[in-house]
Figure (tube, rainbow, N blue to C red):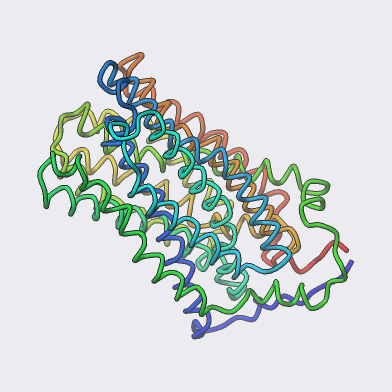
Length: 446
């Protein structure tokens, strides 16, 4: 075994300039990536079915909506591939270059979706091309989160790892806020006919501007100090992937299970509630978009609170608080939603962001503590990607199916409550094997 001094364990009374750059780069970068992801998710709930599924949308709108939500899940299936490839590159060649690559790939895929011809123009090729670009989005997202999380945590002082790790997490609600606000601006500035004809493309094409901003910011950040130390002292190491699956397969599965409930509930907020509010509750489209945008600010605030509490109470204890709250709230939320009126809709969505934030803010720090540095990028990326498949990939599709089949919205809450119990158990088990505060990357398997 070779030991590396923990370069992030020196307490600091103030955040240094380089740490500020890292926090800004991880927040802005993940915010842009998730903007791309959420624009698609929201468009899937509103317009992609009629535009890309042609006759199905005309003959069976309910089935078309289910299939439209299913295209969200397709991307999740390719997240593990992105995690494997980008995790391997990040562990061998560095976090920084891999993050820049995933940012550009995600942006290019999103912009191309905005240029796609529809079913009316090229027939069945339209959904084929849409799914291909969606796959590229999934590949990029699979490699993005792990790198951003590690850049933040590995630059952090020891007593602020959870809070620093919450900044790339905050990129998720930031992405949703920008995506929903952009969609709101576009829909209110034109007629429904104009939006269906060409306006829906604008939020996708706007990604080009965001990618340029994110690229400039991420290029200015230094490489992770833990990775630099690892690169300087390691011998010619065996492939990180082989080490990961030989020694840490159980931790990858545990990391995945920790995430499933949060990701499922998050994608209900991101994709399903907007469609549900309009199509089932009959609420005005603009009012629903405003309510979800405002609720996302709660997600942002409670994610930062989760990171703060992770440093004070411990990451596992904060996860436990979040998942107990989510399990208790999952079913009552739907009675609030169905109570009628936009205020109850907003309240229901906002209250959901409390357990979402508490079970999201400390995630990066807990994951980083579960894997040694030479396989950390691969380990956290694979855990995150698999958790996304088991949790959020088809959450909106399952919710839509439950509504179409049984007509009882509270069953969706029961589904989320069950996942919350699973994730609560996994987080508790992780607490028995995770490190005690020092990154496990201090120890490298030779």
